[in-house]
Image (cartoon, rainbow, N blue to C red; front, side, top):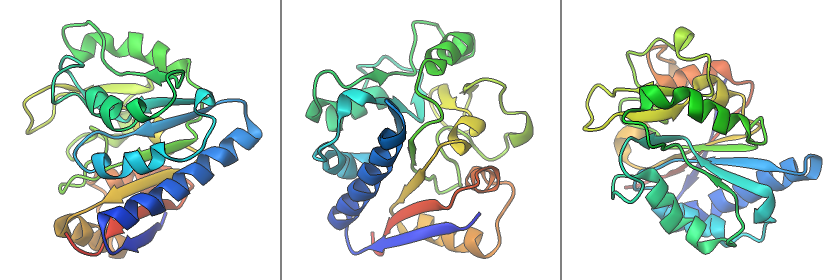
Length: 228
């Protein structure tokens, strides 16, 4: 499935372009359904574009926000995606905006899969809009090269021990991501842009971003800057 790449001169204009796209996608879902789900990623880049989305006039009480993945750390830890999303998105939204986190009190994510599957199953599904980042190795959410996409999960989520990372993680499953009504990929940095160039010309079936392209029927909307 091809990527629909939208290139912006700087992160500010990317943020506004993304916010306009996301608001339209969510409004489209809400025109057909009483509730919608928005999946957002962690990392440093969302700090630049999520505040623009928060300024959009949407019925946020009808939009449940959740995460694409989470590090298995306390939700107040600086490495927590939940902490980042609360700071850069939820703190700017009405207090009654629903939020579903991916962290439980379990010692590790492997023991939490059933609990989180049930939590995610309560969401308005399929997801209205999934927003993802992209790693330089081609990973999305916490789905990494080397994993087997054909046996990833029978649940909405999957516990992951990343090949190179200090903490265990919980990730939405490939199936849940791919079944979204709209998917947006936000990319910054020359290495990631070159990676997109390569997979647009010749998809590498070892890369999770390619798995997503192969499993969804959608064009994946890519928002990228033309410089670092």
